[in-house]
Image (cartoon, rainbow, N blue to C red):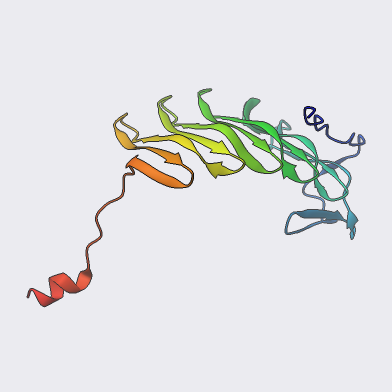
Length: 177
């Protein structure tokens, strides 16, 4: 059995259109320009002229690298799409430059390690995925660094500290009065 063919985004032509153009319409996951599938780059600018968002589309769906920036030319996130589906590494940063998220997708499904951080730099989430489903070690932390949940998923079953609160039946407090 051979390795899967690497997925490569289509080449998007250098057709740049400001997102504020009234000819744009979005319907679900498809972008239209003047009632036709949009192919090109849709961008949005900050008032000072810096780029806020740069999104590429092919036949109305996201294709290739999508980027967003904070004011001051600070990169906020990078995401990759192939034929409208998340593909490859997705990264995000807080305005202070700290990591915000890092995960990998394959055919629009999470694959491998998924991490999220608090703006302070503390890790808040570390999950593992296999074909879009949680599998393996899953950990969550509160913003002060204490453990919120720490469990393992094997074949769809959870084992460990899930972090759920015990449910209270509101009728119990009414009946006791």
